[in-house]
Length: 509
Image 1 (cartoon, rainbow, N blue to C red):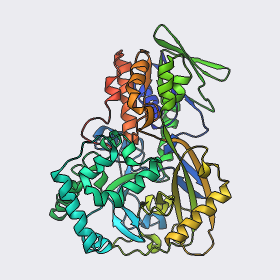
Image 2 (cartoon, one colour):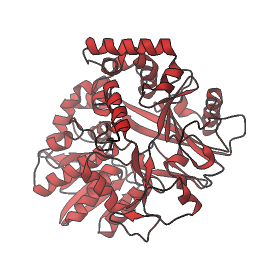
Image 3 (cartoon, helix red, strand yellow):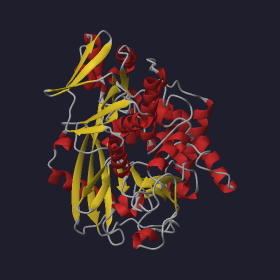
Image 4 (spheres, rainbow, N blue to C red):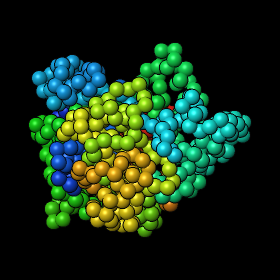
């Protein structure tokens, strides 16, 4: 039996473990630092309500990933309204799971995300329809149109993220809907950020793509497969949040004979003759033939013997951390002016992007709309998650939970999202290294990749494992590619690093 140690029990690590156990012939051990599986894709429970850390839409343009998910957790047919939460109907189940296990299903959900800007809702991505024109006003709309045409005629060199956005949306729309939000997210102005981020996360999205999407929708030819990923209209979602699926994957790994060890923080990596020979967790040593790492590159390099220049680059790789504040309220002040029906007649959004520069809040999740089963009483209460982007150790990060909640409530009231009624319950979650960032020493990252690839039996996978802002399906594909290479006896890592560099875009959130 070939021994494999996997560092990290997030989507990449668990996918690798599951794939290895399915193939057989492997002794697999997963080392997870926390006491919970799923990484940033975990689900947090508090007071009978559940929080999705970051929001996770289960959708991919890669059919292999879609099949992988449905084999683990079958997909329930589209519910009528949200009657399921009221106990009506029996779910229609298809896929590879057990139809009798009605809790172990994914729901088919409708994607609604909008921008909240100056107390008005705009479609996300911005669509030039009557609502947008009304909210912007005729003069601003005209300026936006002229600006877009100008950007089509005079392309800027895509040396930074600012130019990347202007080339696709024009300067006026960029200034309104991208500049401030991007600076909130990264703590840097877009002109300081590599265009690689846009190339990876936005790719085919542009005004032209949005117009094509509108036409295909009117013509009745639009499908998730044909749409740009940011324009999909349906996605899958585990009944009790994304963590439910990853806990189930962990259970299956253990049933097949794999081991998952919790509270194991890797602090050292021993190497010899171009190979990793063992990893250390405190006083414990784990030896193996192959090592799959989803731990942050910075920590990986610092745990091993590496040249000073490689250490310098790794230590200079930036991350963005974030804080989520969960608030339980009786109602929102926001009116549902859409034609979409929801339980409690709340707005139908999964996410609301907050563009206003007068608040630090970046996004609002409405957990009722991800899945009504995430909320203890989805009919008479609304459970929301407020996302703040920050740096570990800064003022927002260091706030006490009470001060952080009070700050969030004050911002929501200022925006007109909630009224003066008391908040029923609250909970804060802080997440380190949530977003690998594309500035500082990132421009030299290829040197780190070359160094790590020099270890024949070390495979870097996942978002932090590759310092790449991968979505869940990207992370899974890096793990699958690693397992395929190990199983074939190969040492070439190029297929793993090439995931999400092709034009076609996979996405989960």
